[in-house]
Image 1 (cartoon, helix red, strand yellow):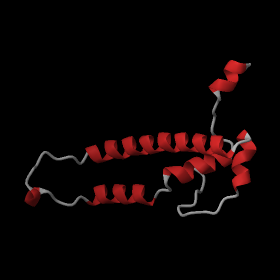
Image 2 (image 1 turned 90 degrees about the vertical axis):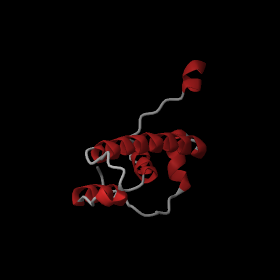
Image 3 (image 1 turned 60 degrees about the vertical axis):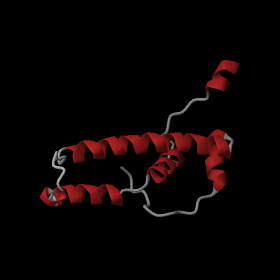
Image 4 (image 1 turned 45 degrees about the horizontal axis):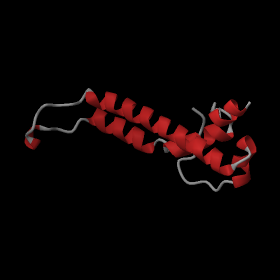
Length: 105
């Protein structure tokens, strides 16, 4: 994965319109990709944390697991899905199609 800034970066809106010719279409594409990334990351995190799942209901018996904490911190430090999607879009790594335009042809 390329280095993606974890914080907010000022973007030139014209860069988003270069690919599709319309800023709003570009934002819709980025939004859909961000949702895909978010679902993937959440599933990945849940599967890793499921290994630590316990059936104990008593809070006194639940103990801290250092490995579980490290996994959680790793995912918290990752760039947000929106940032990842924006970088992918600007680098031309997102495949998309416009069904309405395909039907017109």
